[in-house]
Amino acid sequence: MKVLITGGAGFIGSHLADVLVSRRQDVTVIDNLSSGRMENIRHLLNRKRFRFIRADLLCRRKLESIFEKGRYDAVFHLAANSDIGGGVFNPETDFNHTFLTAWNTLECCRLFGVGKFLFASSSAVYGENAGKLREETGPFHPISYYGAAKLAAESFVHAYAFLNDIQTWIVRFPNVVGERATHGVIYDFIRKLKKNPLQLEILGNGRQKKPYVYVKDLVEAVFLVFQNASERVNVYNVGVDDRLSVNEIAGIVCREMRLEGVKIFYTGGSGGWKGDVPRYRYDLKKIHAMGWKARYSSREAVEIAVRRMLQS
Image (spheres, rainbow, N blue to C red):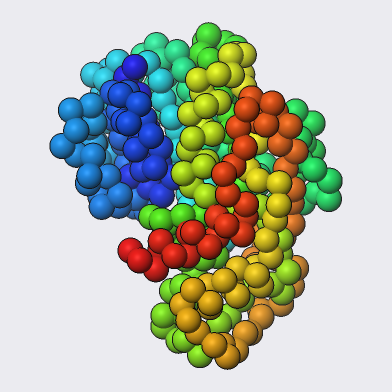
């Protein structure tokens, strides 16, 4: 199968590329390297079944040329704005890099007859809700431009599926942690503590509590859903049952960095930034019924991620 991964040099995309190449798929990665890194995929460059193209998904002429030459069977669309908090200050960031990149890629699938499209979505489409978040019923009330752009893109995925006979998969990611990360709470804590090991600023009140999944668990689930979910539109939450607080993550990072007596300062408020969802919990019945369950709990995922990020 000839597969295209958008954003494939990024944190999650590069791990997905590893999985697909290991399963003997013919993989092409597109990335503009704004947040992706060549070192994430350098080990794949000499593989016969792997190709890297540096390109911007907002350049339609270039993208259409890539699709015309590639004749892909499937597209895994992971490219998006990765700085969710930063996007709050400029709505165009997520309109362009989260929504429009998805629409451009979908349109190329339509124009060049790509029959399979997997979209990496997010828990952000649900917004702030107290109960378990269910794939079909939501509720869907995003409170960030990022969440709104992901939800708008999901709607277009549905429409393209039915109007153009494209089989689609929408996988809603939770907080993902692991090596090659370029953003997120662990990345921020390590960066801050390396700069000043005596103190740590925590955004919000530290009581934000979310599920964290290890990146290799996530990409295995993505491939399993792609292989086994057979409806025209397939929507799945992927995550873990337990949750971890930001304060607990700070404790793990300090312990793994062998730091004692670190003074903690809080910026205050229930969320880390405007648009942050401080607490959520997935309903995971669908993905569990398929036979997948994360190998690592939230705590184990964070511990592994911290160790491997410190080693890199």
